[in-house]
Image (cartoon, rainbow, N blue to C red; front, top):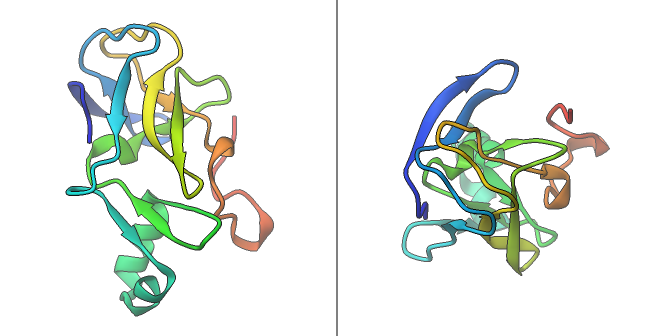
Length: 133
């Protein structure tokens, strides 16, 4: 669940991104897993979904090493990758981070980013399904 004000915006070359809607301090937690809002989709449940639903879960979920997709239902799902991100996930449970915090000051209007390589287990055909720059 987002703990800060945010803005969604088209980011050239990335699609939709999430921007800070307020200034953030270094080390500020801006997202936490919420058992009431967020969802874990297990392998059996995933197999029962229709094609469109599976596509959504695969795109926006974080797959762990147990083939579970952890699905963030708020706009945090639009957090894009950066090789030098301004945020980092921590407090892992089942291989998935349950909190995200800044690693430096982030100014209002700045895109919030994380390094996908730290947590993505879902590499179709052994390759990344996103462009790492």
